[in-house]
Length: 406
Length: 234
Image 1 (cartoon, rainbow over the protein chains, first blue to last red):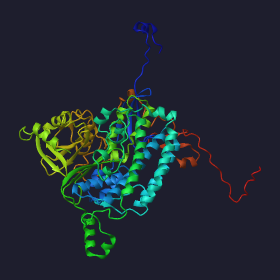
Image 2: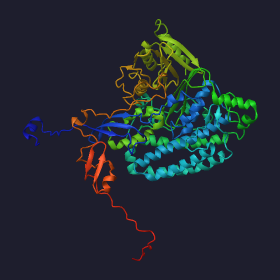
Image 3: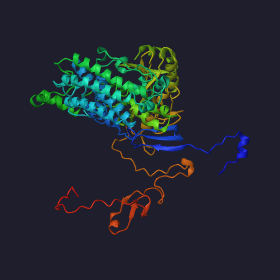
Image 4: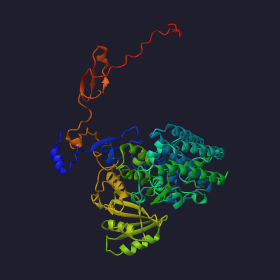
């Protein structure tokens, strides 16, 4: 309909076209979404007015499933929380149960856990950053970083027998002692990882397209990040130097020297850079760990009530048979009580709040998923940005469905 | 974790009468834990955030535990941390079934989703929460899965197709499946009909569709493999 220009002139001459916000559904299966997650967007043109982020499509009942097996049977479930860095979850859960029982693992076992954990962290950050770059059209960094991730996984496979779902943690130690090749393999990849990181950064950090889509996009302020419970690289990108490894050192993190990289704007670019710098710090930690780790000695506590006996003893001695039977059939029994134990996972503070009633079955296992809180803050990062900015912003959160939805 | 915070809380909320203020404190494996009355839940949380010596500015986690044998069966557990003071504390309160708890969203905004999750998993409603929807489960889910009396092998009824609210897209919105004259038809090709030379597809949602499918590729006709290979010069 043609506007009435006479009326318009009386009102000041502004022509207002009728416009109403459009509601758009993004997900749960969207090619640019890392997990199955749904966003209901309210758009004004291409600008996002409001977004309703809906997680839960990967809910598998992790916490409920834990309440029906033994404590040791939780490990395979834990692998599937953050499936990009399963070893960190394994170690996190072991530490929680050990805190409940007051067990301390021998020093060699602690170094071993740190080595495997830092390898997992490297693979986690590499996946996040390279996939984020790929979503912006840069395919080569993805291929290069996945190549590095494969070297890391080769070491993890050599140590644990599995590339992804290791189930390698045990209460009171690890499933197997380190192989004799561990130190050489880690030493071999460290310089190569450095090299690929530098090459990847060279591809991206002078790329106009990449910078335009990362810098100043998806900003989160320090105060809002703290209020929303955000942790990990997302919090550090806003300038808060909170890292559980420094703030509350567990394992032997107080005996190694490393820095916490922080950003200052809290935008996509800072999150990206914090992750890359953390990979370098992890490599530093790895160098020190393999330097300090003893070549001989047990990685497990010497307690037949906690650790399964050697297979040789199970088949040849009655004590071994009994210990094995009791541990497998009844499970290990921690004292009644509840603890909250927290470690630095790939995405932030990974906490386990566990309640024991003194039986061989967990009464309650609650995981504090870092992604869940980081995803909660996504709304603030997205609102007011363009719809295309959702992709890099959401990618830099590194939401892992298995952990967020449990 | 810090003893000082517990002392501060005791001084502030120690003597409020039976069932109010601080009910218990414990210190298991170095985790300081304070149980408070349900009526003082919000007051204690606000104090923890605002008091200069506590300065709890980071919400860490909020969850619940179900003890069906107790009279007050639910324990709501809150963990907070102070960035400046670097200490933590665990705050708990006990609730009977059907009782409501005041929300803490006005103290720390980060408990928004965890409170929704506790509602979703345990059926504890938070009073004053602006968005008390289920978060991990779908709205039609029956029961609360993390309660101890919810059997893990229980199955849920099938959910009907949802009819979108008419408020979407101004009340005249189009939703898939579209009308039969719009868009690309989607369905399985009825090969039986095709064999008889009719171009019909059957779609479970729309019904019969005729002559709507885009022309399919004719495919490659393979000749007998013992024929001599074609001369590349030709």
